[in-house]
Length: 304
Image (cartoon, helix red, strand yellow):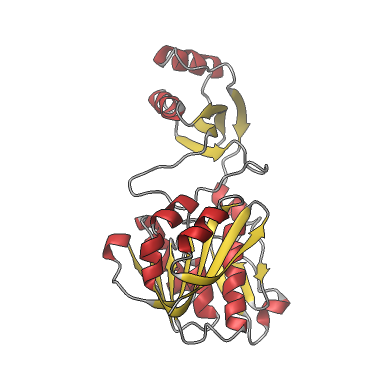
């Protein structure tokens, strides 16, 4: 059946009040999107803090109601529930009943990163180039957690892993994917020849996604919450999280890299890389920052 969709723009601070009002008057579902999506001000939410629900500064809220809902009566009910909110910008439209996730996935195309790495959705045939004997193909359904390869921060890390493999620095080695999300980086590392991969994320849903994606790709990824992660060192560590988290976790991440090992840090906006380069300098040499649009990746070699 079709639905009536209400859409409005609000701030992060007023979002809880708007959502509470919408749910109180019978919203079937409420979704939140970055109001600056597809602009130069777009901001990725890559890794929530434990117990946090991070939001953008400006959001677009969408709520679904039964098709026979009267829009004017709905607005009156919302204003009565919380008269302090501005409902004048709300817009309405009829939307068809369809599988929105699958419709979105149909737009997700195979992508190549570096020389050998391919991310291919399950509903697509392999491109001819991805059938080569040395192709590292990750099959992914990006509906369960972050990490479809489409964001520059993920792409930067995938290209780095592909380059490591090309330089012979990945084969048989153990990899730590810190902030694993869907497990895409751990999966790519294993497909490129890594000996084992461990994922860490503070979102239990991400651990489910990582385990599921590993099983579907025929590999095993040991995934842990941060407090359950076994202390170990790795010759290859990749952390695709936020700059603030990379700063706070610098000592821990440095301790996870074996002497002579490699690290890649991503989730860094252009302009944030300077402080992080200084932050990691006591432990790493050959530090380098690479840019992709508004995003940066830092790589380094662990001092002996």
